[in-house]
Length: 385
Image (cartoon, rainbow, N blue to C red; front, side, top):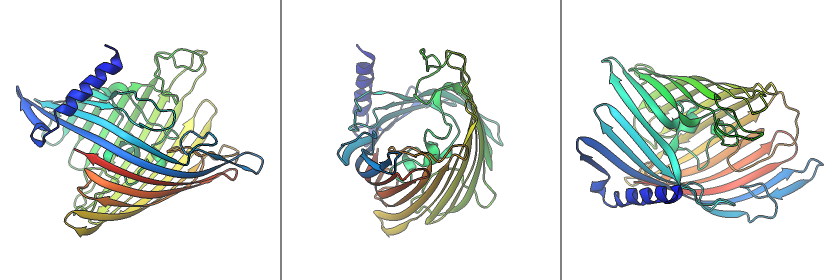
């Protein structure tokens, strides 16, 4: 049986296990098992003009930047089956995904998104966790939001423009009452999605690594332990601050270095209906000694309409700038982060928190260089069970 077929079969077995509420969480032979599924359905309409470099503009598709494409697209942004197992301080996680179904030039390719095992040690006044396997590094909170994103698309801070990693490696995290610190070291993954075992002119040689460290700090009387873009109107007041550093070291087959260093600070404030946050990120690419900065600020206010509906208007502003780069034409591609100003305005309708909610949003992009622009309208429904 082919690998894709095997993964598809496993996914079907997992789906069969969650057809009833009683089967979602169960215990067998002392092992607690939790199975869930996540689906994000999207309708996207875009009007995009890329600068042609001579003062004119070229109409392009939102998703693949090619010309003469239909302006509307239906897709399944996320399709995932998640299985977690717990026993004697150990936790394992296996997540199957087949994302971006229906997008232009996208074919079905189910694969493992997460596959790891971790051991938690209780020290009395704090807990340590050691993890090995494939997971996101504890770095770049905008990217770690998962199912609790404020807008249908990810923040510019979480995209390719800013260092992040999801690969196989080793992780250590220590959590106490008012802080959490963590360190990750993983196989390096380049911008094309290839890992360090890739061969060819643009591939990375074995030994390429990604290393990151992050600390999160909250305060007595303002404890906020979980980072979410929105708390969807949950009661409580809290403040959480983060600081992080990452470096990736890689060489292509010719021996040329491609090292990247990143630094970021971020903050999240929650007070009942209000949730607000900011990210400031800086990245230096050693190959050409260029810098990139990203600044994002966002806020949302949740309104309880009745017991079954919370309405949450939201706004986000992001600025992506490369001070070492000439103001050449900036281009727009769906959920990317080229130089320019991004403005997002939307409303979320929560029927059951982040388990069942509808997002309606408009994104506007104005290029830093050239006269490129974009206006994207998205409607996205998330269902998690």
